[in-house]
Length: 134
Length: 134
DNA sequence: TTCGAACAGGATAATAATTCTCAATATAGT
DNA sequence: ACTATATTGAGAATTATTATCCTGTTCGAA
Ligand SMILES: [Mn+2]
Ligand SMILES: [Mn+2]
Ligand SMILES: [Zn+2]
Ligand SMILES: [Zn+2]
Image 1: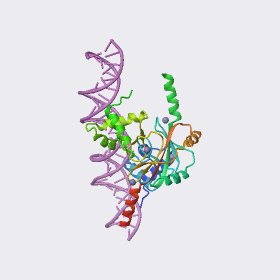
Image 2 (image 1 turned 135 degrees about the horizontal axis):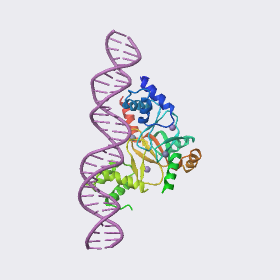
Image 3 (image 1 turned 120 degrees about the horizontal axis):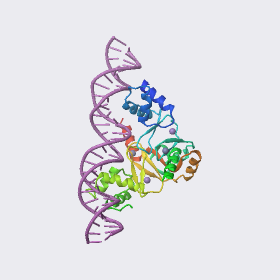
Image 4 (image 1 turned 135 degrees about the vertical axis):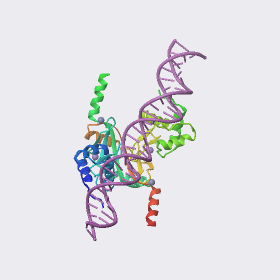
């Protein structure tokens, strides 16, 4: 059985507090403020476990690091190609797409995810400023 | 300007031959059959360069490794959660989705992709066999 | 053509993210 | 309290990727 240890509780709480889709390392920094002795391995181990148990969402998209999300219902994301920031996209989930896909593949479909790439407002401004400085 | 060196030519040719969305390392193995002295770094370096120049597609999806695709037009993929195999999905690209997303975000949208996860036919069979053996 | 600068390759080192190992500790159930 | 099991924290190991460095090659101007 999966024990609800202090570590797991705090990891889950801190993840639930933010909307930033933090990486394991970012979460480690947040959690360490409350549990200074926690190990990075513990954070990784438990994020993995909680994702497997459907308690949280593991977002494996572009960029070099995995990100995590306390919102477990399927929804879509946009990632800044400049800084890696990930935000939620408030558009309806395309359930009909799954049926469409199922009709054209011999895979047994588990789920799907849509990821947009773009430039976040902050990076747009920075780029404009850099452009002007040329 | 980007010189078309022998290495680049062979990498591009080998990538074009397959539909398997190979990783850099898989491509390295393919290319080495023709250019046994080529370095893995050269493969990485040139895949990156060619992706930047729009000659090929870099697929950053789930799984631990980046994959590459000679088909540059946007299209969608399905990845086997068991073995990591990636296949094309033959469903139309949702261009209207981009407009929808643009309306709800302050990001400047560059592109999007859809990734399904599922179980490939081979893994379905293997799992069924393992299930039966229990 | 010849010369030099820029380009590119191969070998290898370095980095980054993640996973593994293992002894020590905590916990639940009896 | 006792025992079996689960979990932790520290650190080593692994994996994928990128950077460095030196050498050779190529392009293009003189
Ligand atoms: Mn989200
Ligand atoms: Mn493809
Ligand atoms: Zn940004
Ligand atoms: Zn499979």
